[in-house]
Length: 228
Image 1: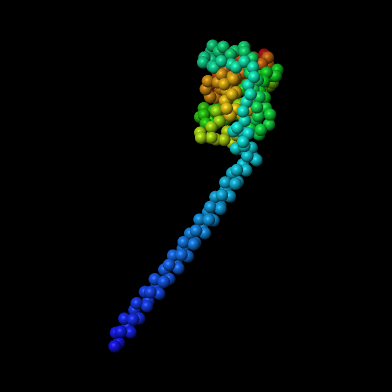
Image 2: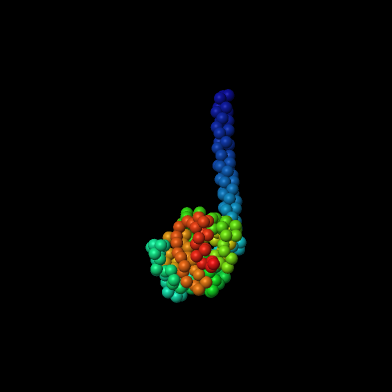
């Protein structure tokens, strides 16, 4: 007679324990859901901050979508810098916008100029930009000669995008014409990156070359159009 109550009481304990397990599990799942929602909101807020970065001049629509209208006779593609048929030809007029969306034109305007074409994903361009910028900062650009640049071959699927953010990081000071559809590159006969065109005061092509230039080569290139 003493064992019967004992057997009746023993199952009662486990039944109470099992009844609490779903409650505990439910609380744990709810906590996980709350944490996940907090993380999602935090990540979403970060995306909003990135989207407004164009206000600081980086990643703006104009810097990646601007197109160029080229007028005048297109230059033949450069095959041999030592025997360039474009030398003596009039440099085409290139009309479009800069990286902020403001109107910009590169044209024969009575001032000699160095025109530098850059692609954000090109490792040679990435190495050349700081070299050219230091050359400018050191006062090596001859007085009266303009340095202007063209951002071309823009591709969001390739490295170092967007191009205006890259140039801002490098402290690039030359004006930048945006050539998202490569119209300007085709008009000047671009063959490789980076691509340089020296234009004299009469608007004629004095020299074209491609690849990385040393500071000494930049000196010589600028001397072609800087006058006596």
